[in-house]
Image (cartoon, rainbow, N blue to C red; front, side, top):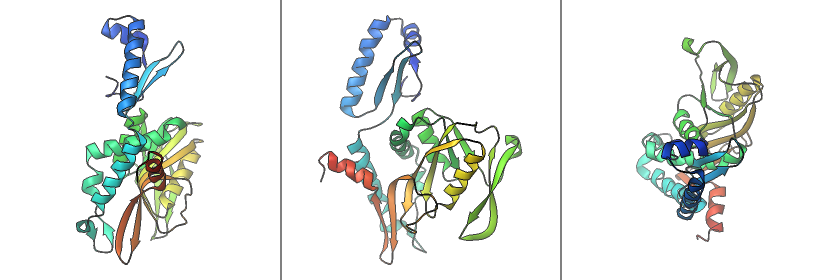
Length: 263
């Protein structure tokens, strides 16, 4: 029940009616669930106090497990058979696999959970899968910015998107109903290289009077070192050189392993 609807607050009255038991009994069961999930690193069961309080679940593993998971993923993606002409890396089969994306989304969601975003925003097309899984883990809605707006989405807010590797001017749009003034927005994407697309997304969100509270991505390409967006969190660093491609867990994940006593 909790696991299928992460981030949602289940009130004690709701649970009491559904299971036909007293609230005092529920409190004991919830405490047992919390201790068991915490001990096994399977997630966080959080109690919400007050008249409108209750309990909610977040599918977050412990820090060491997350770091080891990313370390193994780096090894998988670093296999020589994945290197394409032009020193590119084939990742579609792995990064579009639902079970793996579910775990990656949970890792990103855990990092940003305390920021309590109101909504997540991503850029079509490749950012949508990881953004959807992150939104699911947080129990938050998702909006998708498009390069070509769709009639069914109604009126849109549109800005120009400038990219140094593309002389042709492009646009980025969000439906006017996507965001509200003052909302806290978490941007999620699959990869950051120059940061120019993310910079445009920051500007687009600003047009709504909303606030970007964080930016997370799976991959960060090491070059160029100076990116259009400075504040972002990534899981994997991709280094390109004449010797080939090398993928490494992000430094903050490595630090988590060190703190847990892993070599």
